[in-house]
Image 1: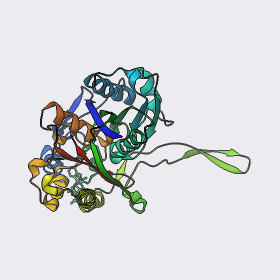
Image 2 (image 1 turned 90 degrees about the horizontal axis):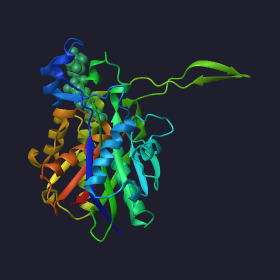
Image 3 (image 1 turned 45 degrees about the vertical axis):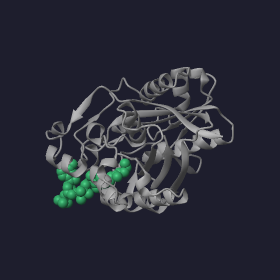
Length: 325
Ligand code: UT7
């Protein structure tokens, strides 16, 4: 059974913050942020906009583009590291869009989350278990940032992107490779730091409490520039597709310099890299489906073209998918 991407959709909060606005808050400059990251602004969700609401908007956009009703969906996979509910927000998303016939679960794999979720969806389609699957990548990183930490607060934005995947004789997903290196976990974390221990008999039971995001930017940068070109090459080699046959590369939008370095290592023109991080910053699990949706809407991507998607981030995790559009 072929796995076909039927449609895409996305959503970002209305409120956005320009680099200049950070200059009064922390020791930074528009020039530093732009030249070191490529980011000009990012969208931030106010308290009235939940992760579920953002994900639902992206999902509804993808459903209308596929001409499907929410009840046509059998499975929802929500990739997020910032759920409204620690037990998972996929069921909240199911209720919000009225996809009453679906099973729903979350996947947590940070900025690689959408890649892992799309690969998972493909397995369920290939085994014939489900016909129509909604895959959403959504994150509200702004809620987990220390706004006085200049090394992280300027990087992230909030958003959501979605695709509907269905069964078809036409196969969109040609191949994939997923990787994890837990030894590097400490480079990028959002740790549970229990406090307010309560005594229960002889033991202390801590009360759950999450800290803000911490990142060793230099190490994550080096990891991305080394591992991402390698996983893309391995994936293409397995499919006997040469790098020149790829029309577009849609990578996790973390830093323009990372994308430039990867393009140079792959010996491809930077014009083949789809980038939108100047408008949104790093939206974690949303960044790839958001960029994909924009590239579809602007008619950059044409039927029959070959596309590489690649995510990387906390875990550390990374991976690539080769698509035939
Ligand atoms: O989505 C998950 C994956 N995440 C990533 O891929 C992020 C990967 N890392 C990066 O993109 C980059 O490492 C950063 C953008 C985070 C940082 O850029 P960098 O060129 O690696 O800067 P750096 O960490 O080497 O810092 C250079 C200097 C430091 O000052 P000193 O020690 O040289 O005096 C920093 O303290 O820049 C300073 N700095 C800043 N200055 C102004 C750090 N953040 C800022 C800031 N404004 N916001």
